[in-house]
Image (cartoon, rainbow, N blue to C red; front, side, top):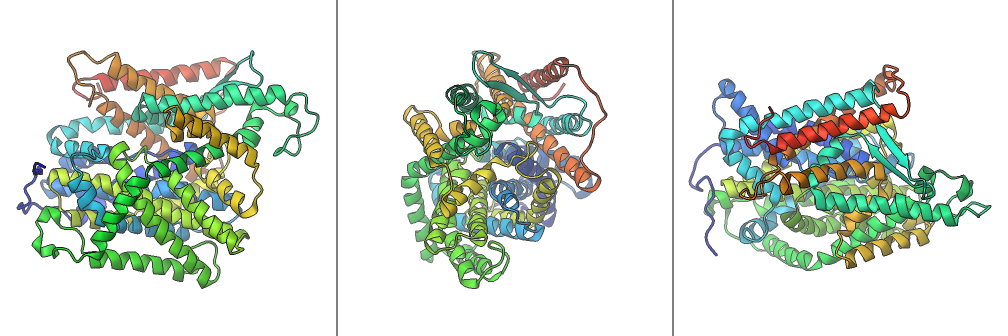
Length: 638
């Protein structure tokens, strides 16, 4: 294999780690992490923020050069590495913590932040032994798309400052748009039409710049699969239930009050489709893990080998091959596991030490297992497509089954199982992030040990800010509401209740599992398809529109002599800005709602159907503008 030569030579003494870089990374990472938390609570999806943070870091250090002199590429990389960790914390937290609120628990910001911090540290520590195998030895076979793209942004720093404008413009547009919809309430935020030929069928659209950006980032293939799952729910299954259940005089389980003939489409979705979708998502996650078994086994062997062998002393390695000492890695992991067992309110809501100890052992086993899976999978499909929810489901199933065998089926057992899942989810998510960041560092010639320490700082510093944002959003809008459905956490709640209380409508769950199996056999992405079934169609349609715009850019507006790869970069940056802007404004509105009450708006009453039509027209105009930005050859908003 040809020896890889990084951008910065291993012998270089260029400055990398600094308090300045860590603080700048944290300052920019916290709002992006908060926005990712908001996005995940809305639609159950999160995105990688490594690329926009790399662009912003480059631009910020160029603009502030007069304040503290020139900032080198390695120091800029430390800022980007620290900042991207916040989004990984958010991804793990929103998958699980809202379920505690749905059960009536009131976890504190301190507890949420502690769980996020511990999961983040475990994710970093467990991934470090895998670096030489996944990042170095597999360099030619695992592209780590976000990591490679971030490296190119940093290397091309001379033009990065101008292109960063698209991120900031997107943030401004996303924030203003969300303010108009959510604070001023000057335009309808949702539009829908019924399909008269099909009983209770509806096609809706949520007016959301963030979801438009998500679709553009995910690209057409994934967006199309997701919206197809939504159509199956709302245009096929709901009409089938409405048609064949119309003659039933009594309620049909799990509905206990209304007969099907009296239920609206939304009620049918809540009482029947969500269980089908939960089964589809859970089984799709299990399928993903089953397909990953060869990867898991190979990575586990490498990880255990690296931990057990003494290896070359750190001072004997080149700068670009120097990890944190294995004694530090092992010691930090053991300390975190011990603290999880010792601290009385880390796992669940209190409880005896021996129960917390078993929970800590479950965390250690599942976290190490799924860190290896996550670190390998993101190398092929990227962070955005990392099936963290599937890994969390498997961890919850295993922990819940163990608790059920031990008779811990009360509220404490549910809370303990869920918080085990929280730490595992954060660890798997963080492992995917540091894998991308280490790929970036490998290409540019960073010092791995310095990156790993900055990632630890990125797990510690933003953890309680992300926890505060999640807690505030729940207090202001209520988890499980139309404004903040928290779909992934609701799914995790369903999984735990089904195992510990045995009260699920298993027939509907297994129907969903059968749909995921059929999708897998047809070569369709089962997890993306299952998420489309589980979420409302109205949240999938703006994602689909964004994916269509990306397809148009790459296949219609791209000249024959142009490479498709890289054509969408500026649209991705603008879309990332839309997500961040809407998320930040959503948190600001939550602050307002918490302290002053939910905003009433300015009282505009649009006549039907003109309000929805006008709102839809503005939304489509935004999509066309994003397409124009993405199509500019100079990559700068004009």
